[in-house]
Image (cartoon, rainbow over all chains, first blue to last red; front, top):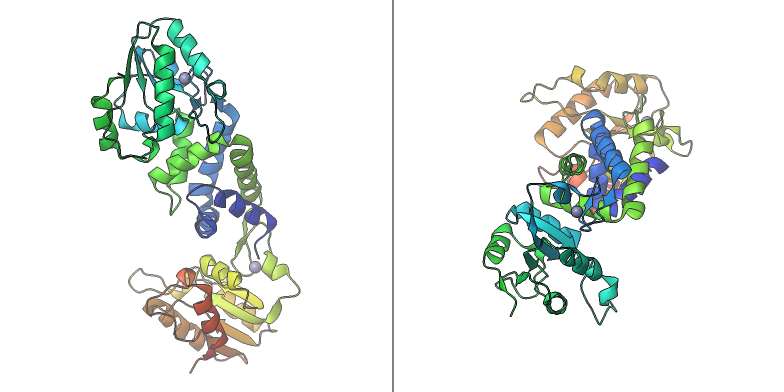
Length: 198
Length: 198
Ligand SMILES: [Zn+2]
Ligand SMILES: [Zn+2]
């Protein structure tokens, strides 16, 4: 029924998580009806992001600049490094506005099941950052899953030879819970009560 | 936390109905992580649509061509005209694939409350289309709301002087129901059982 262009747009939108085919059609209709107020701004914003998209070569964050806005911000405490599994986790922590330091994105978690080994993550780069000096505390902010905790223990061992305080998010996270799905209150509490890794 | 470009994209997406701020952030993250598989195709599709977007000067449908694909399709029965309130209703009927004719989009419904009068809708254009000849049946596919039914009655009176069969969707639509929200089964039944306006 719709033209190939509109069909292609509906399909591109329906592949976004959270937008099924039905909501994608509604979204398309909204964009078509509000050309100047919705379609053009979205097109412009998307184009600007696409043009400048980069992965921060320091921390692994995705941003429109490299180094990313967090790594480039002199007001951020360079002495505190929060290690997360994914960019989504970094964003979740940033939304809580509770962590004044910088980040390190591992790009996943160790998993025997999925065959993810230390060399598949940015662990060597993390060690080099700590080795480079200036880091006082490393917060291991892995998910409260078996694999997340295994990763945290592995990291703690790799880091223990450096003169840094290694902490992890307080338990109290729901078992099996993933950072990116937590409400900010729970996240805030877990961050405030972070404790040294035994 | 995020760059102005990413913030602008999040805001543009969060203004789409059905995507709140939270799902917009997830959508952005997905797009950033899947640059080639998600961001670029969406950007391309959006650009293609934006470039060619038009309102069909015959029926009022929104498409990437004028006349729209439906008006331009010689296989569609030009003798049957289905009058709908909004483009969303046209799309809902098209999804059901049950109506072989063409459409006329009013651009709303008569409303004393909202001050929508006949001259605010494309009613004169509808009358001219019927006057032009070749139309055997006009299906009034208004919403089953008070305003929709008022509009249908008004249209029936405006059209009665022409030698066309004027029908409306069978009742059986839930009271207060809006076409665009109906499942296709209900819609199909209502269309099949359409009856002459008394
Ligand atoms: Zn960075
Ligand atoms: Zn048309």
